[in-house]
Image (tube, rainbow, N blue to C red; front, top):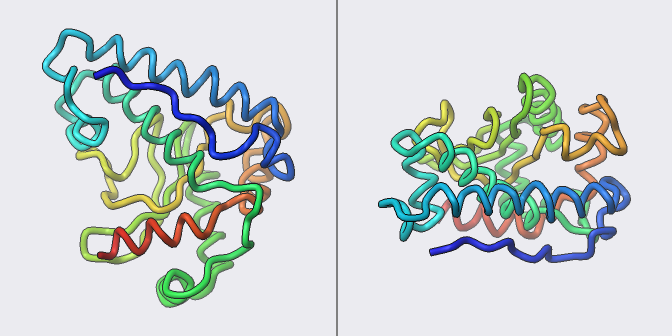
Length: 203
């Protein structure tokens, strides 16, 4: 089963308020596409050829580094595109906002903790808001293209929000100012989608 590059749910310039169109285009057509190409090459003719992406991710510790890294890169980016929008609602509402407030103290406190997770991730990686197996919200970061769904993750859970903090995600506009990119990114978070993921993870 060959994996393919998913279309973005918006135009490359839709997130211009926070992420420039050229970065989005390169990120999608070059970086994400390369992970898919390399993943397909890594699983071709192996016992992993017919496994789903979810199966590969879940067993990251038992597969080759090429499958783990490129499979993670594909999953993470497909997820990342879906939780952003040019029509951001600014903040979550309903049950998700109530849980954020109960868990972290306030929405701003959650954002600050998330920012710290991303800013202090050494080298390349991701920051995550996920739901643990016992239904609790948690913030973590992962190196490279790992994510909380992997058996190798230090903090395991179901991601509902994730931010790419690899330099290729922000360097054209923000250069080395990762915290500035992270702060601007909140303006394009699709909280409707995040809430859907939260509801599903809690079910």
